[in-house]
Length: 446
Image 1 (cartoon, rainbow, N blue to C red):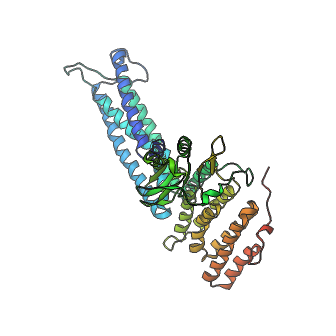
Image 2 (spheres, rainbow, N blue to C red):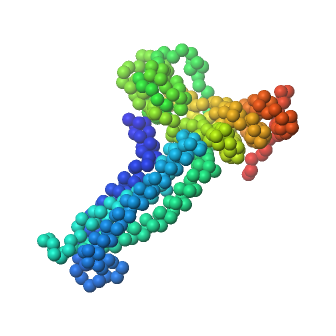
Image 3 (cartoon, rainbow, N blue to C red):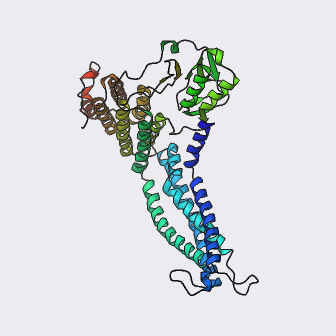
């Protein structure tokens, strides 16, 4: 259940309701605390205290009623603006970035503060009594003063929200957020550049037929794998476990989830534990899926290149960020694919997507839809050259292959000879006879 709870928490903290709910509960608690302080201190029955509310019951009711009414109106406005931002992001950029908007801490905080202020004012309003009522007069001066303070902070938050919402709908901001999230995930999952061949390779028997296979009982995207749980399970039952799909793959019911060696330790309990360790969901997430972060940027570029948008500049911005991610990824070591016990026995074999596959996610669709524009084709070939100069020689042929594909596709889509010649001049570093290892390398900064 740990893997599923971790996945649930990832979804919950990125939702639009969780933080506002927590802030609303905090407002309820604060209302009861300040009302009790008013009952114990009875400031309203003493000499006026500076900075505290000094009016009567009707004045307190008027102030609290105005705050509550205004806050619920402004909350509706904030919600409407948020929905518009989500709609624009989905239609103009890509639906894959909606989670980023919903998980925006600025939007969550503003929405939660407004709802919390409304709730606080409403709860304080219920205890205000005039002297003519049966229970006697009670004006919670401290509570009303706190409500006024919350309303003033809400005004500042409204100004911030208007700026934040307008800024968050800019394409460059959305692209930068997606790129930052992907780079942070790479920093988490991939080790620093420790050289090639340091990580142990899977044993030869991994390519043989497995002794047993665990099958999926439900469908969905593989969002994350709890490797620690699999390792503990394999240690207890003396097994070797290799999850079959990559993170981000869609699993059909009845498809293989994991291969097991040997089959003598496999029973229903072990099968259920393996299924629990491989968390399936209705969509891909950035919990552990680097390819999904790359896919987001590629989708934004493809949408910008569509006939309905026609925004090649946004596509060029995406290519720049994708190039940075590919360079970062190419210069990292592989994640720990093989996990062994103290005696050297292999217990878990984790398969990550190969570098060539992630590079294909980054550039294939952009090449297919974008190189009909000579400017995009020129920038893409130039970016690929810069990438090839910054990555290890072993991974350079993948980038050279993409550059050749760009040239081939461009020649079929660009009919003007001058435009073709312009792109080919930029692509002079790669030809059918070219040697990828001759690409000029660039030393990293000290």
